Image 1 (tube, one colour):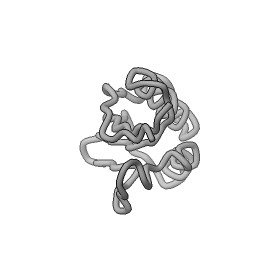
Image 2 (cartoon, helix red, strand yellow; image 1 turned 90 degrees about the vertical axis):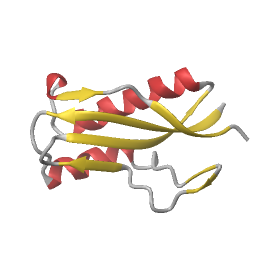
Image 3 (cartoon, one colour; image 1 turned 180 degrees about the horizontal axis):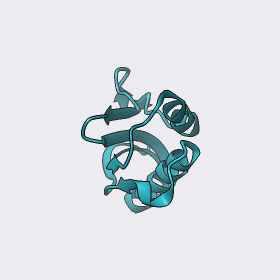
Length: 104
């Protein structure tokens, strides 16, 4: 098992208000990549470009391998957007990318 920092891009079909943002971040709380190999203190969990509707989520997940980490990250992203009030078709989630690994 190892800790993986996963970056997940995507688009949302409607603007995200502050309540939705708080709900989304509450789900991924604890999935913030504070330290995976090296410190990344300035890394935001969520980057959102409101005019374009694009987002990037950066999460830390524990998994046995890269594929498992990507699957875990996608599940977490889906849960977060559901908690934020987005229905299934309102969010297009891109392919997860491993951006950091700590297998120690």
